[in-house]
Image (cartoon, rainbow, N blue to C red; front, side, top):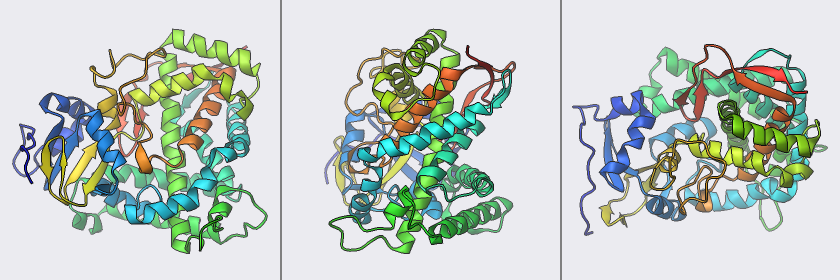
Length: 434
């Protein structure tokens, strides 16, 4: 194949390459890459990664999942947790899984799911106390996990088991980035970190298996729908496929939405004019009550707050693909088996695509195609996009209609780039809105 060589990022250290810089300051590291080209080769230990810095090339990769399949060290580690669910499986399995799973996530079912979304966050905020200081991420995890229990498991998961499972979710997800940066043989050594991961992962699997084994004949949740073959399908999902996809919904449905909500609440607190606009909207639309599905069309400011929060701090900030055949990308020849990296955070912060990119701006216009991808694009776009965004809008409106959140004295919020991009140190004081 013809084509010019992909520029290599300078400054690689012996053996480790750029791994230390990437691990210490991952967001700063990514933001500096576009200056080196549309594609940049980065060395992370034994890995040679091709990072995409251009929205059009990113879109090409996302739309061509035959050539650029799910794979690479990140997805290899994710598969250790969720198996071959719809978010992590190879292309050969995805088409069928999508046909089976999508009816359970179709927009026609959102109104039914929204009842639980509204109810869970209304209950959560009803327990808050005026003047209380909250660990905001922990509170949002509580809200999103209860929503998942009510919608995916149809309420068949007791609160104590749910709390324990959320602790295990944090353990396994926190370990993924570190495990992705080391050779797979090291993840099998009996170190304390590997043992904690293996034990938490096993407990999660056992709990999911127990829930699946329960009687769901009289329930109407997402899990019972997965257990039936939809019209046009010859067979239902296998037991392993049901378990893998249930794990996928459980983990993805808790962590990413919780972080998106936490960032939105933080950004509102430090941007008073945006907060005023949002308060005006929820006061006019909700009249002090919880947000419901029927309110969604009138919560345009709330949606803008979330969209801009997702631009600045997309929970899914870094992804990998792997080339299945030799190909050309941006005029460069790429052999089969190469790891391709794309980053929503990188694209969302490019100043030539998003003027004054670090500014929180509710009036920001439409970005260039492919430059705003918090949920991905193409056939592998997040299957739960509508579910997650509906939940986030209803939750944010419900919270802000009742409470005003301000940064707690002495708190210092900073991004934490784990598997999801979350706000570390986010503690906020709440005051009841009259």
